[in-house]
Image (cartoon, one colour):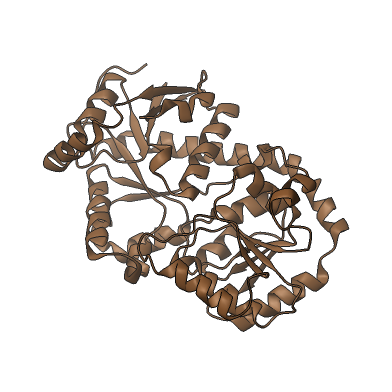
Length: 393
């Protein structure tokens, strides 16, 4: 039995990461690989306790106020000694997705969702870019890295030629979890949110690279009845002025009733808003592997998305592509999809969801298990000097 660990806090994670790990644990609980035991370490076990099962163990590690001194010690040592000792105690064969720092006791398959700090350094501080590069450099200790797309794998080779010996593993994640949600009735959603009229749905955090500005400009060029409803945290920690300036542009253009921002909503409401929409929007300039694209695929929804490399790789069957720099191109797509929208067609696609759900879950977990086993093979472990060789169970 291979013992594979995850170590995270759901409360310190970006929105897409929260969805990702809930989805991974939910899928693995339903479709476990009998050669792999998944061990989850978290300071808030109550956040994931529903996944405790024969296939998944949940263990807690110290939470605040001990976090601050632990960060200081980790900085001095270069790795998290508390979690390293815990993982040795629980005889972990492989830590996946996360890293404990610069250590070789625990074999590690570090995950990098994307290399946005290389492609768009203007959105990052020099300190943050250096931190990410330092973390990525550690993968040479273990000889492998986990990526979410072949596009990201190409970026890794381009940006880090000195890590040519590191093996890349690509795991395309899916978002079948959205099909586990009991969709709230339209009347319930309408009591809280303005969905009585047709709308497009844009479920992205308000970060600069998510490209809400092009959507606003496109709305100036579309029919008055076209509306966009947005969800997601309305702040960009890297530029505090970004969201206020964006909303100022909305007011200046007189689009308050056509570009509607709801902020953060529950996952059930997000699923309901997606279900009842004309189509989903994903206008990003950059993504590692887009959660909203995978959710729209699972929901069998039409999606208008930017023609960046990773979106082309995700290849939604009902995708309509546009250039993320062209508001005119996006306006044409919005007008066309609005004019062609047919409720009967949407209902027919919605009936396909149950069959699609099982397939995407099993495919994802099958790929996940194969990669975990591969990363534990001797040809990788031999690259990790000093790794513990304790007895495995």
